[in-house]
View 1 (tube, rainbow, N blue to C red):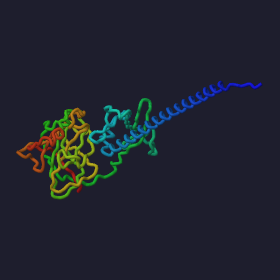
View 2 (cartoon, one colour):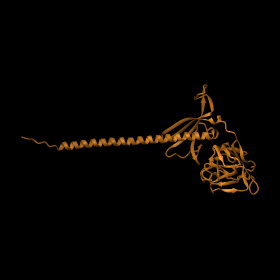
View 3 (cartoon, rainbow, N blue to C red):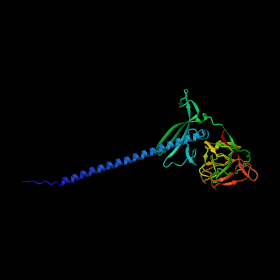
View 4 (cartoon, rainbow, N blue to C red):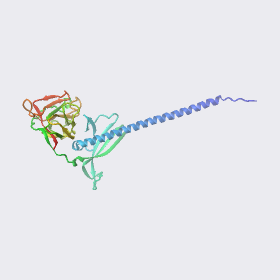
Length: 334
């Protein structure tokens, strides 16, 4: 007798087993994919944080190159500072800066000590020409830090011989003629034009006769332009910290350009004083008040080669002050 066996039960069992295996594999693949995406996000964030930290170190080095005294030596030892970019210029600030996307960035500057062998050590003699720099980028509990050292190398580089090429030094008045840095109102910038001599000059810096009228006005810098509001400027000086400007009486404040600037013969140029944050932008955060000493005389002003202006930026070329001139000196290579 022949007996027939049914295979229907085995088919169902096989389907269940295959389905379970496929489901398990799909779960494993989905978990692996999710882990890979998480890992990629983590690596992307690490790369972005590292790049922001590297940008921070380069920004601090550029500030070191502009002025060791104002940008490095003047800041609190070991405290968190913040990097801000205003008018294309970096600045180290005590005021918390806006987040860089989803990240926070901090700068810490600390003293450096050297041992008896002149090597950097945890303790010993303080090195006034070296600082330790730490740039820290954070997101939640994650942190990327870069550590480096800054040296005041420019103290060992002799400056080229320079002399005053053009100037007006008769300014004696201290009234608030310029309303600068406009104390957050967007009032604009002051300027003084001058005419170059009959021989070619290469300008290294300008000096302006300034006084600090409030305790902590915004930091400032000078631009050299062919006209008060032309774009772009021929050159911009290193920023000058407001704390270095005397408050009691006016003094000649130097604004040094990164490289000497060649100017044409017998041509009019303009020195425009600017602030960080921008005085020409309302609610930018510009603060305090400075005085640029001046003299009023006759119909054309005491200096025949130029003219003073104020409120530049908020109203085009600003307001011409025909009877006024600000105190200035233009230095050039000898």
